[in-house]
Image (cartoon, rainbow, N blue to C red; front, top):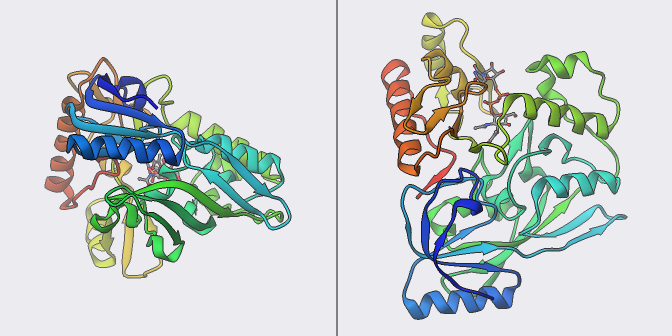
Length: 334
Ligand code: EPU
């Protein structure tokens, strides 16, 4: 295990901005992780953990040790549908492997960037499905004590793009392995068909067809972080009361919104709010709002993290002023 000093993080996060960390280590085993943690403790330096860095925006150099979790390995128990995956595996590769092994459920989550370890942190979701419904347990290490932990799905306190790992009490929990419960029977969630005509127009009769449609929609609507720096949706879709939505509808009949489990709470499309305010394609330095999806900020021309965060802040301010709604970032801003 190597500890790099004064390390450029550009290739280790999906915004691709040029920032440095004081120290950097990619760890491939629990033993390497313990050694990296010991190093940080000896140096009395802060630690930040990344997977593929697809949900973080670095606005300045990081004065500490960045640990990249690179554990690999996938174990599939075909008969029970239980899949144990190491945190450093790529999420989309896992979706493909499970589908090709005849275990289903993850097809709606195809092509979400990032690693398996980051998936429960965000409770990744797309096209009507959230990861939380497939989690059996999450294993890892408390980086403050070095102690291992196992949390079952309810202990993970999953919510919309949220989990214990994003809360202060879970901030020291590094995910090393995720266990999923999948199904041999294919019980597709096609609820998103109501939102995208591609789902309505194309009959979906096999998991492979569902997987292909999801990939096609994502390629059409979202810029590929391998080609252009971005972190997917920069903001979460905000929740408002049903009565606030009624008031908004008086002025904006075309507002896009979604029901939630609670009939008094509605979710508003942040992309709609931003598009309505003309944010698509607007720039700040090298940072730009994607012209295909208003919720996605891109590193269009060698942007700094600061430029991206300033652009995001301007977007938040304009949504607050026009709609009285506070947009919260989905991306962790450092
Ligand atoms: N819309 C606009 N303008 C746009 C884009 C979308 O008005 O520029 C409206 C359209 O009416 C569209 C609706 O918003 O039908 C919903 O758009 P989309 O299907 O892209 O979904 P989203 O709510 O913007 C969420 C997730 C995405 C996920 C999609 C699909 C969040 C914050 N984002 O986006 O996740 O892929 O649903 O299920 O919940 C991510 O988290 O990084 C991410 C990309």
